[in-house]
Length: 566
Image: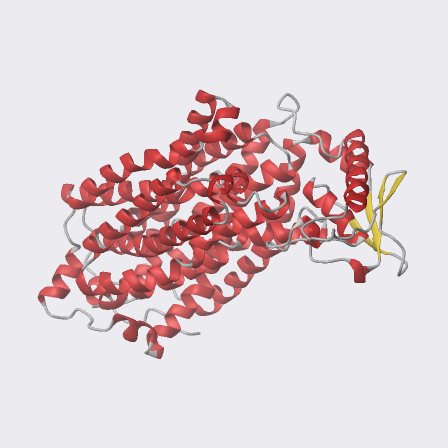
C-alpha cells in the first residue's frame, strides 16, 4: 500500500496541556472563521429567493437550478483561491493571508445586500452576483487551509484532532448563525416584506461581523511552526512547484482528494444542504419549519465534531472518516425516504395510492435538468409533460410510447394528453394557440394532481417532528464523523514549508467541486428522471469510492510530528 506520511512518525514529545495564549489564538481564529462561513452560506440558505430576485428571466425550475449553479460558482473557484492564497501563506505567513481573505469575503457579502435585482438592471444583476460569489469562493479557498494550518501548528502533539475540530465546527456554526438571522428577520418583518427586500438585511449585517472578525484577526500572532521555519530560513521559495511539480508530494495531494476529501465533502453537503433542499422542495415543508428543524439538528449535532476530533487523537483519524463514508453510502437510500414519510405522511400516502406514468416516445424527451433551458426550449409533448411534473416536484415513472404519438400522463385512473408547442413569429415564446394549449394542460394536471394529494404541503400537525429531527441529527452526526478529524489529517500529510498550499488544494477541490456541485447535480438528476431519490446516487457513489481508495492507500497520521516536517 502507498504511504502518505513517510517520516517522523512516533518521534514527537509527549502531549502537554494547552497554554492560555494558545487557547486564545484558537478561539479567536475559530470565531473569525464562523463569521466567514456565515457570509458564504447566506446565499445557500436564500437560494429560492435569490432565484426570484436575480434569475427572473428564466422559468421557475431553470431559475432555481441556475441559482444553485451560482451558489456552486463560489465552490468552483475555491481551488484557485487555495492555490493563490496557499502560496502566499507558505511564503509570507498564515496570519496576514487569512486577514486578507476575510476582508474580501465580508466586502463581497455586503455588496450582495446592495445589488439591484434583475427587474432593475437586467442581465447585469446575475452577472455581478456570480462575480461576487466567485470572489467569495476565492477568499474561502484561502481561508480554510490557513485557519486549519494555523490552529494545528499551535496545538500540542496528541491534541491536534481535538483542537482543529473547533475549526471544523465553524462551517456548521456559520450555517446555524445564518439560519437564525434569516429566521429572525423573516418572522420579525413578515413574509411579504422579507421576500420583497428584507432578505437583504442578513447580507448587510455582515459588515458588522466583518469589523469584529478583522479586529480578532489583528490580535493574533503568527504560528510558531512558521516562525521557527522562517527564522531558520527554510520557507519555500516556490510552494506551487514543490507541492504539485514533485511526484512525491503530488501523489499525496491526489490521494488526499480521492481517498479523503471527496467523500467527506459529499457526506457534508448531503447532511446539511441537500437535506434542507429536500425538505423544502420534495417534502414540501414550509421554509420556517424546515430551517428550524435543520438549525435544531445542527445545534444537537455540532458537539460531535469535538467528540470525533478528540477520539481521532486516540484511535486515529482514518477509522472515523472511513466509517462515516461507509455508513453514509449504506444508509442514504433508507434515511431520505423515512425523512419524507415523517415530514409529509399525506404526500407519501398519495404517492403510494396514485401511480404517475409518463408514456412517450423516448426520442422526443430532452434532459429536464438543464440549467440554461427555458420553458420555450421544451416544445415536444414529452418535454411539456415532464416539465409540468418536474416544476411541481411530482415523482413519475417513464414508459416508452409508440413513435409519433403524443405523450400522456397517467395519474391513477386519469389520463392527460400533453400538447406539442410551436414558437411565435418572434421566437421569444409559444404561439398564442400553443400557449393556450399548454396552459390548459398545466391547469388540468395541477387540478388532477391536487385532487390526488400529490402536491400537498406538509401539515405541521401531522408531521412527526421528533422522527424528522432524529433523521436530520443522524445525517449531521455522519457529517461530524467525516469532517471532525479531516483538518488534522490533512495538516499531518504535508511538510510545514508547503503545508498551506498542499492541503488547501485537495480540500477545496473535494469540497468545492465534489461537494459544492452536489445540490445542483442531485436536483438535476431528480428533474431528469422523475425519481425523487435518484440524486442520492451521486453522494453514495462518491462516498463509497472514497472508502475504497482511503482504506487501500491512506495511512494513519495521528502520530506524525508536524514540527519535524518542515
